[in-house]
Length: 594
Image (tube, rainbow, N blue to C red):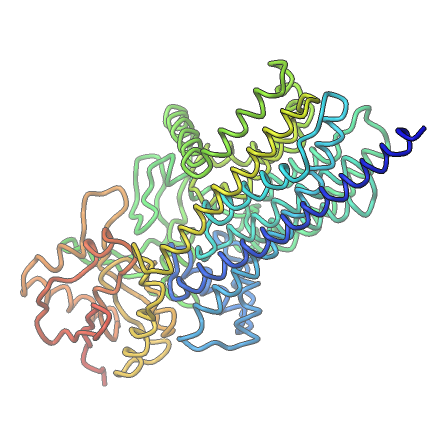
């Protein structure tokens, strides 16, 4: 009798200790992740990584100024810039504080993503316990959370990066929220959860258009119960209708703007670029069968190549504000051979992303699978828990068909890892549980050390991170506005216009450029300009002046050695070029027009 009374008490005490350890682990990971995010955001506060940033911020500025027509951009989804615009509207940042404010918003998005992951992983743990109970033993809760936080650190802080200005971090939050809603619905088919799932998926579509087809996959995963009943069909229909009603305003606006039914032209554009071989900048036609541009940029000179693209209400760099406008007339077509080559290469690239960023988690997952015992046990579990990982696998396959970058896959990797770990059930012996607990701790420590090392590298100014602490773009903007230019003035640029962040801060409009390079062509017009000699340089400058530009800026690219070589300036630049001190950039002012 004594033993029977003491056993529940001992189990309760052990569970209480384990719960306390889990709470400490969760609090420690939250503090650590947020601290790393803050450090990395602070030391990259003046840096915008990637050419997408300038377009998103232009749209956010338009939203904040009340120009809601920017929502009909068929390439850039409105959710992320709408969020940024709220902070622009509330704080009215000047040139010095705009980029730091954007990075602060990213930290807040990161915290929201961490909270979304907390919900998702808690529900994943419940499904793992339910699944493992009938096959053996569940992974210890502390180890399960350690593995989850390790995966989160890799996917969100390493693969995506907080300092990357764009919609990918926000999309990862919706990946986790949609996964949580799906698992909750599989456990409790309620009307309120169906409405919530549809609403979350609609908001995710506003964050990034690829979520529209994947949203349908989430609904199928959440509502595909066997046997099919009238109630199941009703609830699935509720989720689907809520999703469509939420997406309908944006789909309607985009379709009216384009004159055809579309939920976004990102896939269409990328198909033409990465499958058919169309140039994504300054497309003048070709390859054969790809269509004819309706309103391309104007090629004004052949050597060096000069392009003009003046347009109203198209932000700082019109060529990248809406790429689908300049490439209107593209006719994507199926090239099966090329499609298969791209698919295989992109699948290999996704596998490379996984191994480069999360090799330690792959190794630990292999250990978990081997510990499962029977060789088919894990595979059978993975099949039974298909609704956890299928949305992630679908997204990865969809990207692999056309184009994939590491930042695309962060949130989807969390869903794949959740399905793989959830399908693991351990033998009941204490040795297996101890081994998995140690493996989880090792994974979290290893990932944490790697993230701290990355943050330390940025904090100490190694690599290119010192640029993120220098307000170089601010200095450029202030100099130009203090030397005769005014917001709204047209200018020309020698280099890559998508990196003209200083022009965004000064509210200047690029209308012509001598590009650093032309996609898929072995030419470097900016380098050609500087190597062409004084006579050809003056001819090129005269062409730029006739476009209406008030000035030409050169050498204002800073984000990589490659870009500085292609878009930089020689060591000696003769007058009347004027050097902008502390920036390495030069400006050539044209005489004021009467």
